[in-house]
Image 1 (cartoon, rainbow, N blue to C red):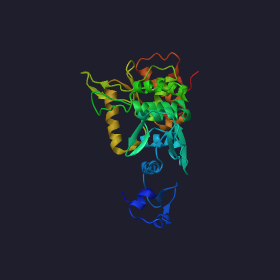
Image 2 (cartoon, helix red, strand yellow; image 1 turned 90 degrees about the horizontal axis):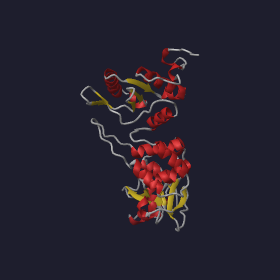
Image 3 (cartoon, rainbow, N blue to C red; image 1 turned 45 degrees about the horizontal axis):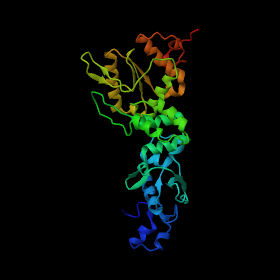
Image 4 (cartoon, rainbow, N blue to C red; image 1 turned 135 degrees about the horizontal axis):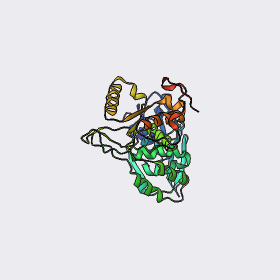
Length: 322
């Protein structure tokens, strides 16, 4: 590994015959003792963590830093966290370093994994450790991410990183952990099949209103029973589906795919609702009203009259009802 391109330890530099004077040059910074950082180099978080654990015996990465490496859906406030979470087993000395949030954790050896040579807390343990720091809905985002699974009769098969049952079983083994009430509430709300935090948000939003249940992993089939479309969320009883169209749907290639999706969905007799960021920013009632109107087209009785709300000029119509 070229020392000019990645963080490195002084021990590694000396092994390669680099003088101590060279390691004090201005093109290198010292983020923590025993570590040097090439000032102009660009590198991954994992590279910094590798050097950190190499210079701190019996240590491992945890909490937000582990979550970032695992690729968890984290809220924006954690995305640019500067300090690194470094831990040791309870009973060992807490890591004390510049730029490091040192911790002591009681956990089993099985709670550790090795990622590209870096020891860190496992997916399940990282979720458990984040529980005190996140809201219930933020925990649902991550639980949905870990448990996401698709086995439709068409398209790419997706297998869970950790099944929802396995997550629940793991959490049950830690009855005295902080944030457990929030985590239990999140796991009760988690579902298999969400592919993004926005899909999860949309499902949770629907669940807060008196609407029929919408599920992930619904297949829209033709008259021969052949699956043709897999919407983000679907209500089979009223042949209604909801799609969240994020920024990636604006590319020409994706728009062509979406056009085919919309055409097939309509021709198979389903009522499709497209939700985008403008709808989200306009407010929850706007989203729910759009979905309620599609459900009514599918035969839903709408007992609380949700479809008769004003969309305040959205959809180029404005109609206020008593």
